[in-house]
Amino acid sequence: MASFEFPVRVRYHEVDAQGVVFNAWYLAWFDEAMTEFLEHRGLTYRAMLDAGYDIQLVHTELDWRAGVGWGEDVVVAVSTARIGRTSFALDFQVRTLDDTGERTVTCDCRTVYVVIAVDGSGKQEIPALIHNALGDPEPLMPLRP
Image (cartoon, rainbow, N blue to C red; front, side):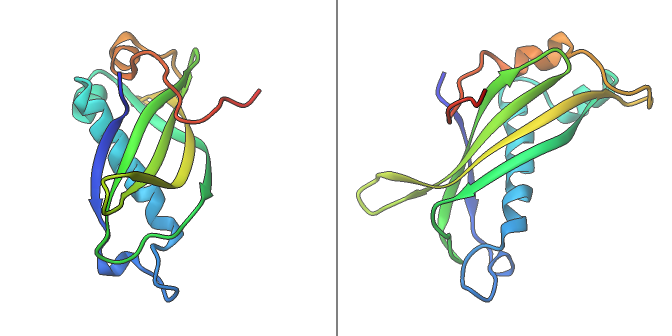
């Protein structure tokens, strides 16, 4: 299955004095894209919460290749990179579209999430409803040992 793509138009307030998207906005985009990715695969965030589960970001790594400016249209590609017992990793890529229709990656990210119980009892094994929404891992970047 191809990666899910979440469209983003860079808004004026997301751009810093250097004329490119300020780094913190990438994490906000990835959070939105993660929610839409799960929903696209049949799991709304509300349904996950109602089932007693939430997810908590525990680690993220970003590598920038190029800046993105105000008014540009980009997509945030999302794919499952790895699924463990209580945690999973998603890969994100910010991709621009040039005049020829070619996509260029401007930022790579891998984020690790841990499944937790909404009742405060802590870390949980990944339940079927989340596992099914994640699908089979298809990393956008190489897995590190």
